[in-house]
Image (tube, rainbow, N blue to C red; front, side, top):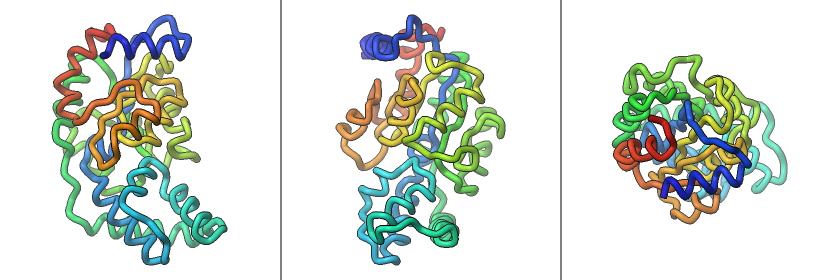
Length: 244
């Protein structure tokens, strides 16, 4: 599976070599099982405005900045952009709802996956569309030694969220590597699109409610079904991609 995916990627990108030195890792749905809380808080916000918004749509918008999600829904439901005041107010409500929910647990297998990646000599860079301070503050508590402030790309670092390639291009810059020297680890279709638009080999881990086909159609190079599976397969991935 991995060797075929590698060869396909090299042909698509017209690269001669694929030798990853950095893993660019999403947060929500990858490191923390936080998407159910994000989903419930967005559904509450939009239904309070009288907008039609279901759980599945929250997962489809995963990875956008808060402003980006609000703009799409305002344009669809009200045929106009939200004002800056509306964005600040509604995203503030969403953030408070999220913070009041039970703490999102660490995604099963995530610590083991990060440790396996570290053992293979690969740098870890966080690339998230989130601006939720509560989650960002928990990173070093639950994943000590993996992410420092200078090794994170958040909603505060970019002007365009996923599916724009900007977050992952920023991740490449912070890692000091080229597209052919990185691997993206994502769980959301928009994140997959962003990784591929940046020219990076993208591993999808389907931890949510969306069908596998949605992630495959977004263009992932490899599809897995849990972080535990990623942790268990990483030695094989490392061998196939000459990481060790």
